[in-house]
Length: 92
Image (tube, rainbow, N blue to C red; front, side):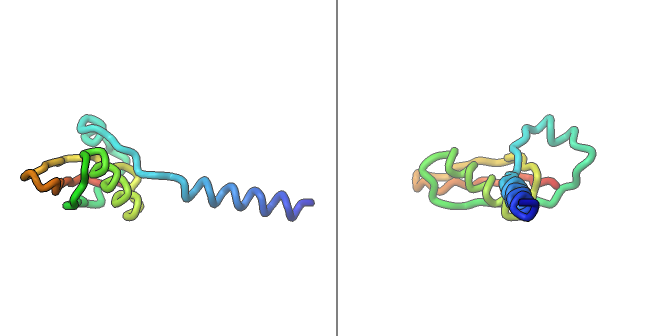
């Protein structure tokens, strides 16, 4: 019985650790984040139908770099071809 409880606890712990996603923050929050350090900037340049899809891609890219937070600094559609250029500062 003790072994089953240990396995269940370990499984729940692993799921909770992998379920953490980068949190979107605004400019004010980014300026006031003293206890984190910048990991750099991520760039996305894809054919998206909406800005929400581009933001979801930024979030996924931030997650892939193990960033805890991201701040969208640019979302630009340069023409009518649905290519959206987006970038975000990422923090840990």
